[in-house]
Image (cartoon, rainbow, N blue to C red; front, side, top):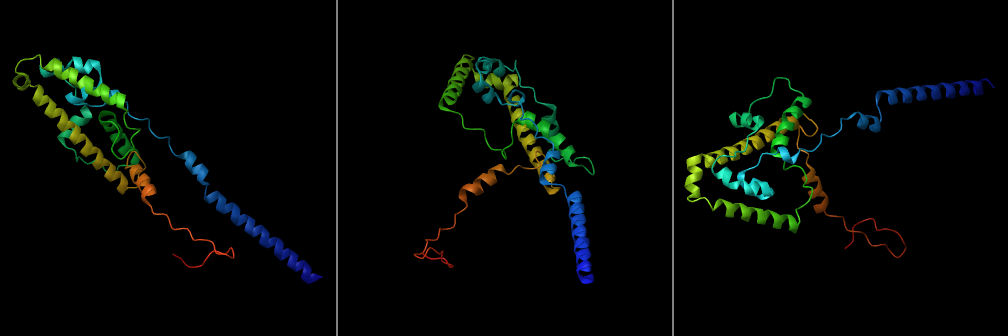
Length: 231
């Protein structure tokens, strides 16, 4: 009788100890759902209206861009280069402040996304359809026709400074992309989440579409699956 009582007491003590350990483990390790709820929401996509564009892109995106092509040739209308791209043009590899954190990198990258548009590590929303391509081609032709009304257009562009400004715009866009890639490399080395690191969306999709699937084993007559691969 005494041995049964001792066994019962031991069982109760062991059960209480296991329950306490499980409670402590749960308190120390929050669930994945709770951890995911604490993550900040993804930033909104950059506004295409704020994106820096070259003269060729401007004349093909809208009727207004096509109509103002001669004014850009005369350097009357100029694309304003954002300050963040001018800073990148000055030094695309400028180091961020010492002991920088991931939020600081994100704050440096977001203005570049606004000025340059989505980075190439992000998946495209979708290819433009034939109607969009036809519209872009027609606007480009209209802009070229309007620009041809200016005699000696190439000489006028050089004399007015429009050609030099176009080269400056292209250089600023290249420097901004280099700056963004450099900052994302720093973020990946520190294990930061996007946008302070490349999203690798393209690599994930490519791996999913190119990963070879293992061959299926044919069922045997007895209904059992063979243990070793068969041809």
